[in-house]
Image: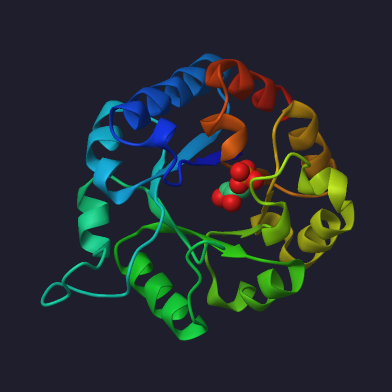
Length: 214
Ligand code: G3P
C-alpha cells in the first residue's frame, strides 16, 4: 500500500488538498492499487466526502466529548468520514501512555491506527499496543532526496523482521524503484509525503509509485 501524508504543505492544504486527494482517488481507481491519504483535520470532512480511497487524520487526541478545547476528538474524526489516523509521527511525537490511550479511543470507534516509529526497535516496542500498522521512518531522512530503502536498507529489513505484516516504511520515498525495494526488503507498503506533495505532476509520480507495487 501507499499512504501519502499531506502534512501541512501548501500544495496539500484547503482547495489544493481536495484536488490532490482527487488525483490519488483517480490513480487508485485506474490502477486498483491500495492508495490512502492522511490529511489535515480541517480538510478531512470535505475530502472524505469527495473520494472513495481511505482517508486518515494526521493525529487524534485521547479525549472524549466534553471540555477539551483545541483537541482533535476521535468521534469528530470518525464522523467526518475518516477511516483511521496516523499517530506519533516524527513531527508530532507522543508519550507512550498517550499513544496507548489514543489507540484505545481509536479502537472504540473502529478507527485504524498507523503508528509511526523512528527506528525498527521502537517499532518493535509498539507491537504489543496492537495498532493497525507501524510505519518506521528515520527522522534524518524525512523530506530528503534519498529513500530509506537506498540509504539504509537494513532499517527496512530489520523493521520487517521485527514488525512482520504490519510494517510500513517511509522517508525520502520518491519513485516506483523505492517502493519496489522497500517491498523486496519485506515492508508491506510505504508512507511518503514530499515526493508527491512537492511534485509538479503528482499523478505521474503516483503512477510511478504504483508501478513499484507489482
Ligand atoms: O509521513 C511521511 C513522511 O514523514 C516522509 O516524508 O517527505 O520524506 O516522504 P517524505
